[in-house]
Structure formats: C-alpha cells, structure tokens
Length: 102
Image 1 (tube, rainbow, N blue to C red):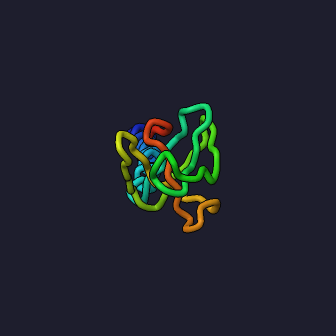
Image 2 (cartoon, rainbow, N blue to C red; image 1 turned 135 degrees about the vertical axis):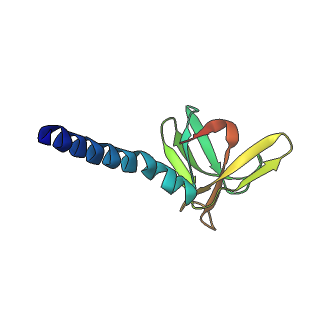
C-alpha cells in the first residue's frame, strides 16, 4: 500500500512537471506571436507592401515573431509583424504565406 502511494505521488509530480513544460510555449504565445518560416527564402519588408524595401532575408526553419500579434494587408497580400534590428523602427513585415504559427 505504501509503495502504491509513493508511486502515485511520484507519477503525479512527474505529470504535473510535464504539464508545466507543455504549457510554457502557450504562455509565450500569449505575450506575442511566433512563427516558423516555411518558404525556402522569405523577405522581411520595411513596410507591409510588396514594393517595400527588403531589409532582411529569413530561411525555412527560422523562428520569427514579435511581442504583439499584428497583421496588415496590401491588396491581396497579407503580412505579419516581426521584430528585426534591420528595420528603421525595429518592426518588419513578412508575407503570411511564408510563415506558420509556432
């Protein structure tokens, strides 16, 4: 009986710890948005429009994001906000199709 109680306690502690780890990414998502680049190469634009200057290039598998979840559109193109030192205001824009939420 004592061994069963000890096993149950250890198991509950382990599952609780695993649950905390599993919810940690969700906590960071609440503080902002993160995306994974899925295109082989994707531009980070100064402004959310296809004629804007490309200030940086990101590659498939890169993780990008910002502290706020902002989006913008220009004609048929959708953009998501990403943080970058390469942009004058620290805010860059990437095409929605180039990224997926993490």
